[in-house]
Image (cartoon, rainbow, N blue to C red; front, side):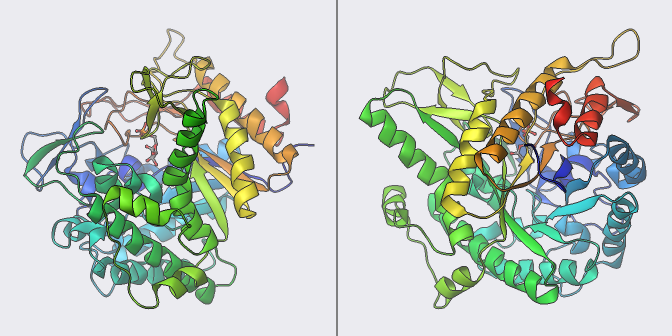
Amino acid sequence: MGFPKGFLWGGATAANQCEGGFAEGGKGLSVPDVMTGGGKGRPRHITDGILPGRYYPSHEAVDFYHRYKEDIALFAEMGFTCYRMSVNWARLFPRGDEPAPNPEGVAFYRDVFTECRKYGIEPLVTISHYELPYVLAREYGGWSSRKLIDCYVNYCRTLFCEYKGLVQYWLTFNEINIMMLGAFGGIMGGGILPPGDDVAVGMGDESWDSPQKRFQALHHQFIASAKAVRLAHEIDPENRVGCMLLSSVVYPYSCSPDDVLKAQQSSRFANFYCGDVQARGAYPSFAKRIWAEQGVTVVMEQGDAEILAAGRVDFYAFSYYSSTTASSDPHAALASGNMMSGAANPYLKTTDWGWTIDPKGLRYFLNELYDRYRIPLMVVENGLGARDSIAQDGGIHDPYRIDYLREHIRQMRLAVEDGVELMGYTMWGPIDIVSASTGEMAKRYGFIYVDRDNEGRGTLRRIRKDSFYWYQKVIASNGDTLDE
Ligand code: BGP
């Protein structure tokens, strides 16, 4: 037994983290274009427009905009059969609310998809990955405004019509559940910006946060996503549309019933509140308790329940980096993960950025999800952010990355053997790109090194790391070389 035939192997990126060309080809500003670089323990700032003398990593990023042919050729050399990427909404609709798209933006993505197809690489497109057009964020209040639904559906119609036959797999919103997780989630996922013209943002500062706006914004995204699913199927019955959530694997710290209940509630909150709406087509029974506890009233219009029911996704995609631990002890030591934190797990190690490493959590979670939803699953992000250096022999030796990925892929294979229907795996950041949480380049995930530093210096030259050749073998053997 092993991975099924036709399993999709590849990597995933987001436009704002790799493209650059932020003001080229008629592109408008998007939210990350006003986010400065930060670092571990040093928050990024959101500014009101672009301020002189500040460094904004998305503006050039790693210049995929001009180098996509070289990068896709490298992906093909590794044997990718799938490349998950996002379309930057503001490249197609510079303000976000225009009736018709910018032809240069449309042409750019057509070229990119065509380039993928040339090598037999299936594009998997995230329609919205933390890159809302800036005008929609500042002038409309981001997704807290219901008006964004129409803007989004119009954008989707353009995508589905323009790229019919070129793209078949779509994800409606990256990590839609990030908006459950506080102010930073509201900015990234919902374009709900802080007041002020130069504000430090990060998981710590939540003083200006509005759960009411975030929950309302999520409802609007659920409706937009459901409408997009229907539209995609209408325009091309071959289209397959997935949700995309960050996974919050929560273990009870102990067998104390308090810890067990806390873990269950936390998982319902972070995973199933959103997952149920998108995969089952209705809010779960525990939603009312969550609204009461958050002190929010979600305004719904007549017909919304029907829209949700008719717009269930075809598959469930998710990112997986770490697990967390729920403890009812207020003094428990803490550890962090991708947008999540919890009690430190004494059985697990952490990365240089403090994210808990837990490959078995991936097998556990795949089984949980498949039991609950019974639709195909796909792991569309997973990887290790680490510091790399160029050795004296000119190579980049990254056994730590190989170890991390190998163990996760092994657990994925076990999940397949458990009976989980898994479509594919696109690890995060096959080429080094800008970090979403910190804006750094030093936090590298790639198989391909990019000569660029946190301040934007470097030649942007691409160099294959040791892990490049390792992944090439994994793909060629459909995962069978893992145990060698
Ligand atoms: C996810 C995002 C990605 C990505 C990844 C790694 O939450 O979907 O955009 O960047 O996390 O996070 P970071 O870049 O902060 O290390």
